[in-house]
Length: 126
Image (tube, rainbow, N blue to C red):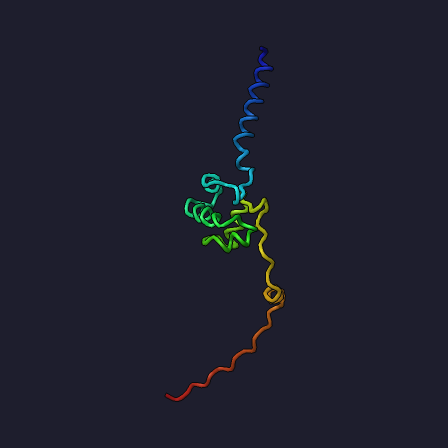
């Protein structure tokens, strides 16, 4: 075998090995199908939370992210967003943060109005 052909074969084997080892990082982990080891492989999801998910799942699959957040203590909207970023899905879907309430959004957009200055208190006799 020529040196060039050997190098080409070696490069192909190396590239294939790298792609196969990186594949789990790209793969989504569905909370309704994953076993304990698969759940624990998601960054931010340790043994305790994986156990809570498996326990809650015994009463039925999670319908959506809201169902997961409501049934598993320790997973709130912020944690759900982080887990979703790490590849966790519910029914194949990533987490979508709920829209901000209209009142809060309007308040955030409204310019602040300055308060009138307070009158100085007169020194009261002691």
